[in-house]
Structure formats: C-alpha cells, structure tokens
Length: 68
Image (cartoon, rainbow, N blue to C red; front, side, top):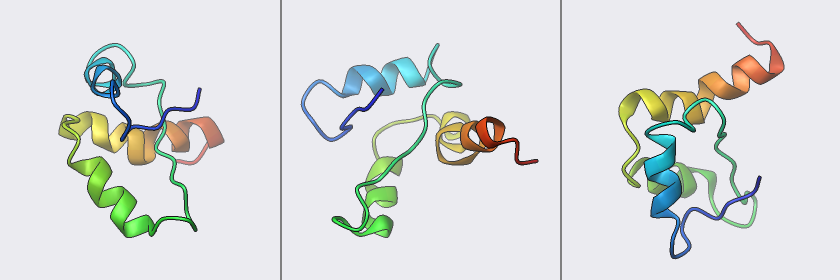
C-alpha cells in the first residue's frame, strides 16, 4: 500500500499506525526528489508514538528483510 502521509486525510493513517497497523507499515521517501533528512524530520512530527516510530523507521523493515 502506498500512502502520501502529507496529504489531506492522512491523519487517519497516523491514528491507525498508533493502534492496529503499527506492525504493517514502513517509512518510505520520495528521495531524490525531496531531501531524505527533511522527509524524516517531517515524518517524525506527524504524531506517531515513539514505539511506533521505531517500527515504521526500522523494526518493520528489519523484520521484513530478516535483519537482526
């Protein structure tokens, strides 16, 4: 599933990620069209809980790719 988190209505996805979707979403960026640092900083300000941010930015991808 692709989602542009900065679009109207995307707050519903933030709320879902803070609940039942926490283990099913991954962070993705539009790099090189947008600076990666800016994308990460903006993503961190959307209202995800800290434990969920860790999953979205690292843990879910690590689990998907079998990285310890």
